[in-house]
Image 1: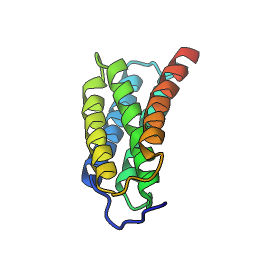
Image 2: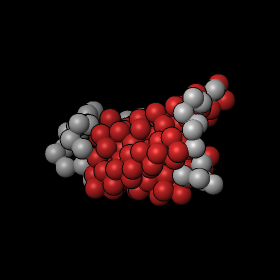
Image 3: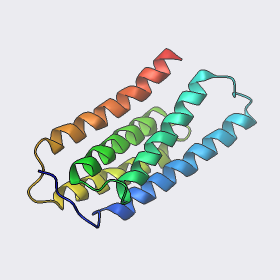
Image 4: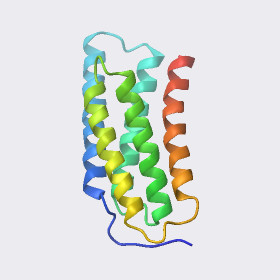
Amino acid sequence: MQVERAHVEGSRLAIAAGVLGLVVALGYLVIIYDEAERTSGRVAVVFLFILAVSALALAGGSAFTRSARMTAIVLGAATGGLLTAGVLGIFSIGLPLLIAGVLSAAAWGRSVSSVRPVPVGVPILSTVAAIASGAVLILGIVLT
């Protein structure tokens, strides 16, 4: 059962998380260029990952995700990615990413709790998306 809705609960929080993530990604790029670390593959992985999960948070808070199922999955992935990046980068760019992750988690919770009945499988699918998102970053760092 797919539930359509015009207003996404927690959309402002998700958009704030996405914007904060984009600001951090751009700040990270500036820091990397100042330190002449541009040639590292790990830098590209982290930058692109932060950009991607920030875009997911923005998409989850916008009208692009029309179904409750897709909104929950997208916000779950954004939350997992932002929180993982925040923990891994806590000594440099991590704190704002943790804040963005908490904002995204609040939006995720509001979006799921605003829909009754909760579509079948949404809690599990969105949790798997959160875990998989964090695993992608860790895998990318390990491989570079």
